[in-house]
Image (tube, rainbow, N blue to C red; front, side):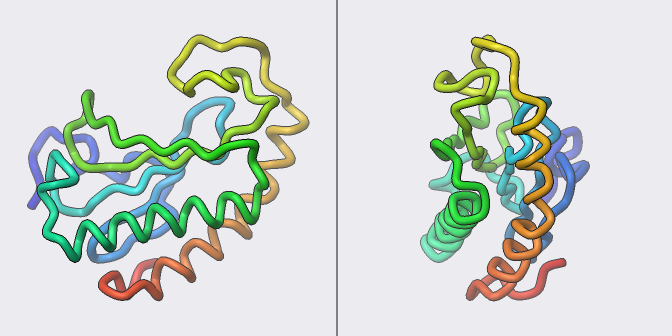
Length: 150
């Protein structure tokens, strides 16, 4: 089910990484945060508890897979998870690799910057994203209940 006017129903919401029958994963285009991903549930539901039990399990298992791959490929200082949905009430999870050098660390990505970011460190992370995303597609496509994907 899609809702007209919802930005996550009307478009991908970022750079498409994985597109499966139940959810998609996109890389958000947030300046200074190269490994800012969103898992977007395909059907327009506002709350996590709107999902049936098996879909909740699939959703959280996918969030875990994304976090595990961010940690193994990028070795961030921390991974932030958030499912706010206040501005866009369509179920989606923010999964963000955070680094001590990022402009906002340790504050949330939505806080005011504490310092300038590191262009060299940013470029180093960006070089790792193709391998991370290839691994992500492979792992998510094999998840029970979300076969397929691109």
